[in-house]
Amino acid sequence: MEGPTQNPRYIFVTGGVASSLGKGIISASLAKLLQARGYTVTIQKLDPYINIDPGTLNPYEHGECFVTEDGAETDLDLGHYERFLNVHTSQANNVTTGRIYQSVIEKERRGDYLGETVQVIPHITDEIKHRIQLLGENGAYDFVITEIGGTVGDIESLPYIEAIRQLKWEMGRRCLAIHLTLVPYLSAARELKTKPTQHSVKMMLEYGVQPDILVCRTEKHLNQTIRNKIALFCNIDATSVIESIDTSSIYKVPLLMQEERLDMVVLKKMKMPTTPMPDMGQWEEFIRKLESPAKTVNIGLVGKYVELVDSYKSIIESLIHAGTVNDCRVQLKLIHSEGIDQANVGEKLEGLSGLIVAPGFGDRGIEGKITSIRYVREHRIPFFGICLGMQCAIIEFARNVLDLPLAHSTEMDPNTPHPVIDIMQEQKQTQLKGGTMRLGAYPCTLDKGSMAYAIYQKEHIFERHRHRYEFNNKYLPLFEKHGMKASGTNPPSALVEIAELSSHPWFVGVQLHPEYKSTVLAPHPLFSDFVNAASKHTA
Ligand code: GLN
Image (cartoon, rainbow, N blue to C red; front, side):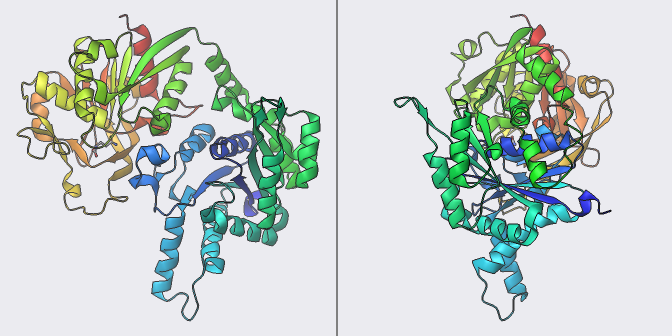
């Protein structure tokens, strides 16, 4: 008998009416439910913009850049996929229009299309189809869920919808199209309105794609009459109209989708076995802890993109995961680094039991970060510095403890007499900005006597990276003499990955990015221990 993995199923998730309806969370939730039934699932995001990847995008544009184990700079939805599924994604899980065109143009130059006019159909659409099927071809997955970024009707997403049309035509019931829409509630009329959904489906039909399932984002429950109406106008059965109601946590969405029988409808439509039922026991346990914490802990996050929570998505989610481990709710205060100075730092950080200084690039707000680190170091408040946050902790220590007042990173001050943070040797020749940082997972060896070792409970770890600058090892003996220890280093390069202050209750800076690896079912130990320390801190 043909095994399911030899015959992968493809599920497409598109969105209409408005952006930010939660396609990524719906995709991840469906994947979770299928995974909880024993199926193997991967999720892919196709982004219709022309950048090769989001690595060169400002976080204001597109939120955080998520880094995968293999060093791909990707859309933040991949973070949700990993946090929900607890499995790694890779470069193949995020493809942009830029990357599609790049490979088609490379093939054209190589002569692969010799004699042909290279066109959107079939060349671009073939490349899109190839990228979708690539994930299914290695036999590892029963389901490949492909989320199409943007909104149906955008000029730039047309080739993707056309690729879906072709794949549906070629593969029949091995493909399924889920369309997300908005069902707005008009308070003046006291009514949910289905017309935007009807129009959105009409647009899909113009492009030749009949959605099989509609997931309707709404702030009020959809009654049977509304479901029947949507079903009638959109040529689908009422059981395939799925309600996606606003909820207090993204982590409740898989359970809401289970109640709405989204997974069941998918499996039935694809003629796949509908038993066993999903085992969501551990997930439900997580939600229970999330919903009824014993206490609240106040943690500050200092960064320069704090107006937009998406910029620090993985850190914020990691803190939520860590809260459940410690039976507490993390009350996060986002603090703009540019607004912090010597005079107001006490007021800005008042009432906090822990402080995170965020990753980042460039000069803006750097002194505010350094000032806040001095405050928490001196007031013995738990501190966690991530990437640039760790680099700022090094600069602060050099200036205020080692008495090197002009110490800096050469990223901010190329002429500093004390470059305690300096550009990595291999970065010196790098001219191109895209995809050229030290990216992805590298090994790190922990010092057995360190707090880091006690937290990880192992000597060898792998964590992800995204940086060009590093701790300048020339200064290491001086730092160590004054109590700032390098507790984690990269074995071949001796690059400092973790630095900690032994005389402080909890003061850890990491060059690596632990936030990319925290998941619902495996919260990251560094975040868990930090939240634990913060919960014990008494102001
Ligand atoms: N700008 C710093 C570097 O490139 C830190 C990067 C980061 O925080 N991700 O090294």
